[in-house]
Length: 103
Image 1 (cartoon, rainbow, N blue to C red):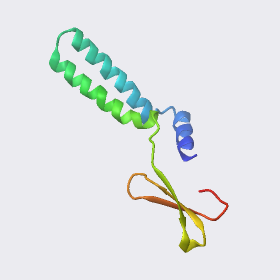
Image 2 (image 1 turned 90 degrees about the vertical axis):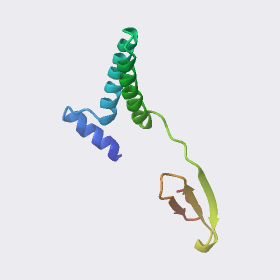
Image 3 (image 1 turned 180 degrees about the horizontal axis):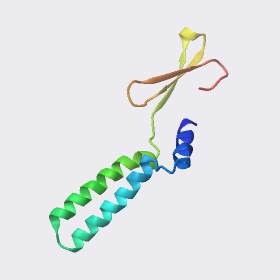
């Protein structure tokens, strides 16, 4: 929800989102690498290819889902509530749902 509001605000202000800038530079650097490769300039090819790959790595988080392990375990100390433990970036995120609810 918040991400959508930020994107809408940026669009209204005519500003590009970071993922759009990364995408543009990724393609620009890839084109420059291809040009250097065609020209036989290995040093320039490597420079532009590294920049294109770095942009692609940074952009991947916005374009591809990241799978996380989820463990569901009963919590005997909370009267039968179910604990959902989501393996996210540290620290571990833990949610507790009352019986009959979902987290």
